[in-house]
Image (cartoon, rainbow, N blue to C red):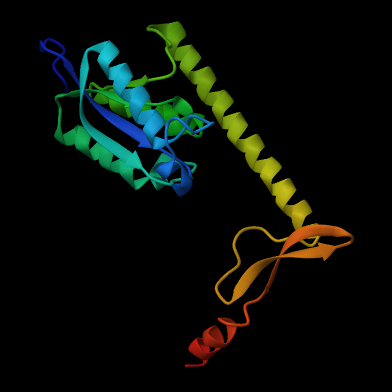
Length: 207
């Protein structure tokens, strides 16, 4: 566990995460959602500077849409790093919604970090200290979880409706191609056989 009597600047690590690979290459100045790696890095560095802390290492979780911490390999590496470097006293994240998609993960991770003498800090959210701060963190995590679940249900409904209208979701598998087709007087995304690649795929399976 970290020694709270140690003098000098606090040592921190920074955790950056995006849900899609597209966000990995998005500049901070053109990212409307403010969630790109560049945006998060800028905010985390600024937070560390305000706290008088030094970021020792950066952990980047690229294109990870996993809903739980257990399915994020880079976050696991971060936890292992903390166990090997007791001088680290801060983990800086962009926002709690970037790190946690549900209340359970947030609570378990916070307890685990506390046991190592490490504090989790949000660059964009300031909850303060004490009992009420803990309560506000929990409320934020609950709201984030509700939003994630509601968004998931909304996407399911839209995908089902799109399929019922004759459309398709996502990229066509190799051997097929995405096309625009007319269905009941409407233009929708569909899939057609790729005349050039389909014979090669068939030959591959036959071989």
